[in-house]
Image (cartoon, rainbow, N blue to C red; front, side, top):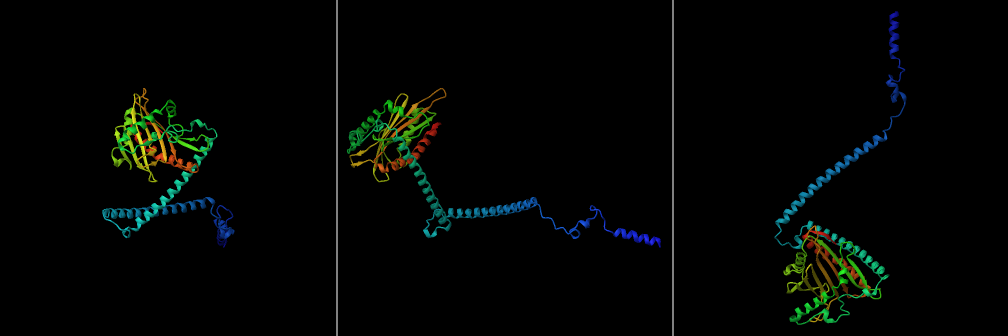
Length: 368
């Protein structure tokens, strides 16, 4: 009987809930404690968001990759189709829709490019007008006359006779007159480095309106001055008409050339070029024929330029410095002068780039 009571007591003790929180698992459960389930931590939330973001990014990348592959296959097929039809004439109705879309996109790009060009041109125009204003504050009227000024010189110094048989002698006379203007004062105007502006504004004697525009050119190359001068002259004034850019070249000797072309307004433009060699330098002159007696036309621009190819060899080797000074006059009202001269400055950038491409063949050291 006693043993039965002891067994009952031991069973009762085993069924009694433990009092230690370390062993009493059930007492810590929400069922027994009544506590709510804890919320995920901020770190867990961030990790979950990061996993979702990476998953979406991966899905997007895979989708874009498939799209690029599809587009590549489509373009390859279109290219193959176009190559097969390359020699066949196509009417407007036969043009594939993708080509029409490409033409539309190209047109939109052109419109955008024209708008950007207009914006940049207006910025340049504003800067030019501001420079004219600053220049007028400290102007010396003695600098206002051009070296080859058709408004003051005898007309015969700026005209070409109507009789072609007289052209050679007249052009020699004009080029000799221009060379006589190459004085030490003009030589001092030639730039001796790439520093400084490639343009200069010259005002009239009243210091208010633009008299003419100055342009400066500098280049330093590793070659003999004679080789540079001959190559630049020959490439700028090619005997092959297909390379002359719409200009007609009339050669009176190896170094005297008359270039004839038409400006955007349909007016004839005639420029005489002459290249002369001296001991240590070559001088290239160019000037506009203002009065054409054969047609009776008067040029809207008067350009006079001097370019010197000079030997500047030193201990490091043979070198040639190309230095140029040009004056440009535009026959335009004062109200539109800034606009017209800005157009000249803007257009001269392509001319300068073409000249630099020639000079780079001689091992350029410095070019402006």
